[in-house]
Each structure stands twice: as C-alpha cells, then as structure tokens.
Length: 266
Ligand SMILES: NC(=O)c1ccc[n+]([C@@H]2O[C@H](COP(=O)([O-])OP(=O)(O)OC[C@H]3O[C@@H](n4cnc5c(N)ncnc54)[C@H](OP(=O)(O)O)[C@@H]3O)[C@@H](O)[C@H]2O)c1
Image (cartoon, rainbow, N blue to C red; front, side, top):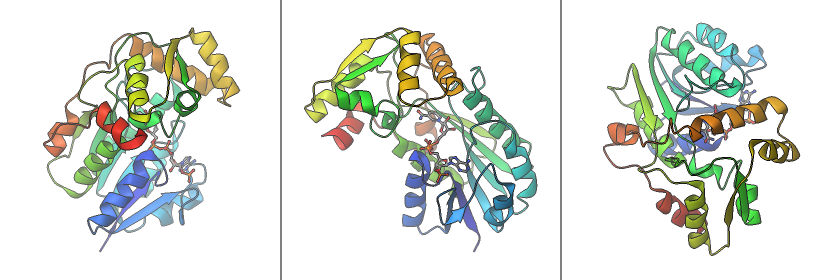
C-alpha cells in the first residue's frame, strides 16, 4: 500500500491532518526537518527518499519560491498534490505569497492531479502563532482597522485536506476556505475574552509601530514587510467576504469563531 506524504507535518495544519488520516486508517508519512522522516526544502538530498512510494502529497510551501519545481520533477511516484496556499496569494506582493503561488504552479504543471486550498487567516493564529502574545498580555495591537476577516479554523482545513487527499472529484479545483462570517479584530478579542474570562483589548496602531513590535518579537525585515503587505491587502476588504470552500468539500458549514473560542479558550 502506498503512502500519503504530509509535508509541514509538525505544523498547524499538517499535524492535524496526520492525526485525521491515521484515525481513518490511511497510511501516512509525516515529514519535516524535525520529523522522523527528515525533509528539508534547503537540502535536496532529503527529497527523493521522502517522496519515494508516496502516491499523494500534502504540500506546504517553503518560505521562498524556487525549490518546489525541482522537488515535483523528481517525485516520480506522486499522482496527486494538495497544495496549502492562501487567499489572495495571486494578488499579494510578498515573499510568502509568491512562494505559495509558486507551489500552486509547480503542482498545476506537474502532470499529476492537483487541488489548491486557499484559506483566510487561521483562528489558531490567536492561540498558536503570531497574535498569541498580545492575547495573553491582554492587549492586541494591530494596524487593521475595522475590516472584518472571516477567520478559518485549522481543524476545518485539515478535514478538507483529508477529504481531498483520499476522495475523488477535486482534481483541478481551487477551494477558498474561510469561516462562516467576517469578524473584526476588536470583535475577535471580545469573543476570546468572553470564552476565557480574560480582559483583552484591541488597539489600532500604525503600520510603523507594528513593524517595531514585530522586530521586537524577532521577525526579520522581509517577513515583517510581508505581514504588513498582507494587512494592507486585508484592510482593502479584498478577502473580507466569506468563501464557501468548506461547504463545497465537506457539505457542512465552516466552524464559527465563537465555536473555536469555546473549544480552545474556555
Ligand atoms: N497562518 C495563517 O493564517 C495562514 C493563512 C493562509 C495560509 N497560510 C500558509 O500556511 C503555511 C504554513 O502552514 P502551517 O501553518 O500548517 O505550518 P506552520 O505551523 O507554519 O509550520 C511550518 C511547518 O513547515 C515545516 N518546515 C519549516 N521549514 C521547513 C523547511 N525548510 N523544510 C521542510 N519543512 C519545513 C515545519 O516543521 P519543522 O520545523 O520540523 O521543519 C512545520 O511542520 C504557510 O505557507 C502560510 O503562508 C497561513
């Protein structure tokens, strides 16, 4: 029986996807720099062994464009790619979006079946990633105004990815994944506050103040540029409308921000 290769297997989406596929009895090969199957985008020597005998791949893009094309060209056994991209990846001028778009293109040109997942910002950015420190400190300061964001739950992304990797009818599709409604950041911290019993405030800051904050948290200048470019794009309202990819694939509504907050913060 051949295996499903999960890249980024220790990450927010990858580790949930591994868990779901294993629970469904699928044979899974989790890979990343710190996984038992060691895979490093910066070390092509790790690529061939990782993909050998894998018929399907969950592809989390590297940080910069380039290596995915060579990886795909060498991965001879792979018949299906499911690429994790991002909503607006084709419009945003930032390294991380160029890299996601590059991974989409590599999969589309691979000759294998491909499906692209383009999610909005994750709910889990509030408890596992970039906004956690602010929430824990009771003050989230961002340059985002009142534009709503239909945050998507990473559990939904993992469920969609599992369905697409193991089911039929998704070849050549690009699914935009979001939550069921747009939530402003002010509302998001209020919802988390109610669920957790913590006092949390949202405060609008200038992009320059946020750049300083990111630098203090250890973000490099180019990554900070990328985040600010994304925020400027979001503020324009371009990805503020909910998308229906979760319903298209799973036949149910996406998880609401309130459900996420109850599950994770209460
Ligand atoms: N956060 C959001 O709101 C959001 C929204 C839309 C799209 N996205 C996209 O989602 C992707 C990130 O996915 P995620 O959140 O599931 O992952 P994540 O939590 O950011 O974790 C990154 C994963 O990639 C692995 N990794 C890092 N550097 C690597 C390298 N050089 N070679 C091989 N593996 C490497 C890490 O494991 P090791 O450290 O063990 O290697 C880890 O498993 C990014 O492309 C991001 O742009 C994120």
